[in-house]
Image 1 (cartoon, rainbow, N blue to C red):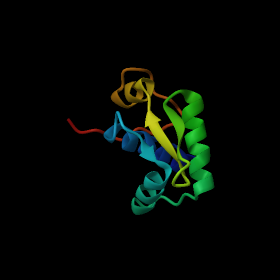
Image 2: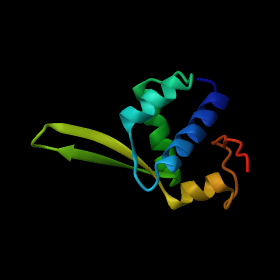
Image 3: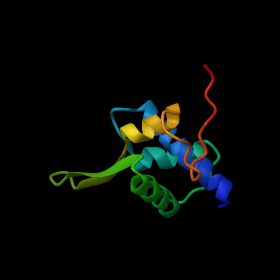
Image 4: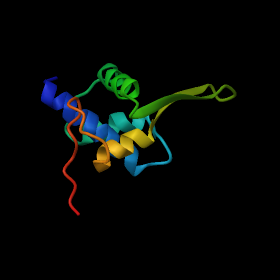
Length: 103
């Protein structure tokens, strides 16, 4: 993946999580939506982007488990800092290409 595509994908992930705020987006939902929007990203590649965004403080990733049903999934939540980045309330991050918003 090219650097510019990686930056665009990170911005897309943040935007997607903001739409669902305060609820999170499951890793599976992100994977499907990313694919439907013509990004090519494997689950391993997406996991790297989630880690990057989490290290920057823009998202938090939580493991959701139901032991009775044997279900475990990762859920990605945007943080207040992530929302501030998208809304232009903090300086731009060179590692993330923000979507162009129309008012």
